[in-house]
Length: 589
Image 1 (cartoon, one colour):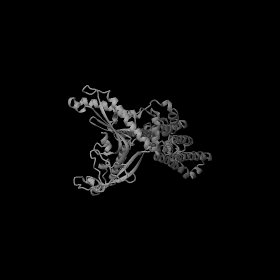
Image 2 (cartoon, helix red, strand yellow; image 1 turned 90 degrees about the horizontal axis):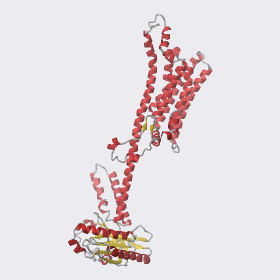
Image 3 (tube, one colour; image 1 turned 30 degrees about the vertical axis):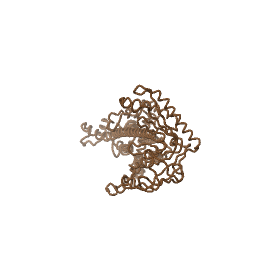
Image 4 (cartoon, helix red, strand yellow; image 1 turned 180 degrees about the vertical axis):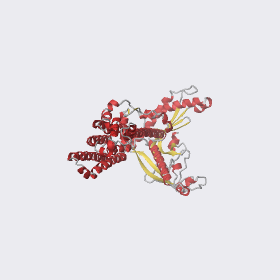
């Protein structure tokens, strides 16, 4: 391999002169309008990118996108070997027999044409197979095949041209070799126009072909001497004496132009092939760089979205227990997917269908409300409040109180982080509420859940009969006892009242799911949860003594603890809160 093989492939490490980083290059690009300020990879004038890894990637992409062009180019080269060379030789066999051409001449001409046909056929088949073989990862082999085929053709055609360069002089005169080269030997190079080859490979093939067919062989065989001024003068001397241009120096320039014009056209065609390849190569590299920028920007956006999604999940986990947060995230994703499917299925010209379809879907407002309620047994609730907080609030500036509460509650948060059985429920003013033993954390091996259905017999101010399938959520067989914070007697039996003050949404409620959460080892886990809550309460008492209130007094707190059954769930859709209800909460408070 003259240029592409050795100069580009085998000297790859030596030519590597840059380690380009796509991520850092496009880090400051926020939109495609800013691509003008983008610093592209450095390139050699002829051999592509200085970062040879990028050059290798570019060539792979170029070959992948040039399959049809390469196959069409080889097919065109094959046709140009069948016609005119082979067709001309077969059609003029009777003439060659009359002219008494030797069998050796026949053999040499036909064997060189046959080898040229074989080269283009083998190249066409080889490239087709390489594209069909997925296990051939290095598609740059295609460029080596192109180079090998054309260099082999130049060698075979050169042997044929050396013996036949003067054969057409009796018919076409002194410029017969130029016509022979133009219509027989140069024509396969036309396929390079649309083969989408790298510029250095196109330059190599065209340069070697022009050098062999138009320079070296004509000079060695004396064909160039026929169209020089002396050759033209010799030709004019062969004309009849009564001819106008017989030994007329005025006609030398005219004949010289006639002889050289076809040669100049061939040189011009070769130059145009190189120029076209240069601009096509430039456009291909620009397209490759833009595509890489888009890929990198897309990747960065995906990573950013993934990071944001992870941060949002972490925020959800900090607001809600993991089981509750996972439930909310799953419902939100299902709602989003339903919205996407809905938009894809709607007819843009049918507003009626849109309204009817939307009427059956209420996921936006009900996503949080549909979160399953959970009943928890043997949960220990801890309440703390600050002694003298009301009087302090009346005498101290609000920002000092906020500063004091922030540092105090942060120290309580650190205590919670030490024990995974503790969950911070909420803070209201100076009150700090913690639950121990909810069983809604990452450690699912210690806890198990049973599902049941709680039914409302009729929509009323006091919903009747709460019955659970399986295990009663309150832990008392046949009982609907249990009270909620702020409404200790809201659950009764067999009472029906008017519901005119309730919203229409409540009338749609017929039943809802309840999960009963309890430890697998009840006798052991309930004592561990209570011990964690007690340890936390003692820690809060000790930690509070280390803080000074804005009034200058040492902070003192009260701690209330109670163990019992509670119901948990997410309340509200705007700024939703994870709340606990039940008489256990009221007693601890």
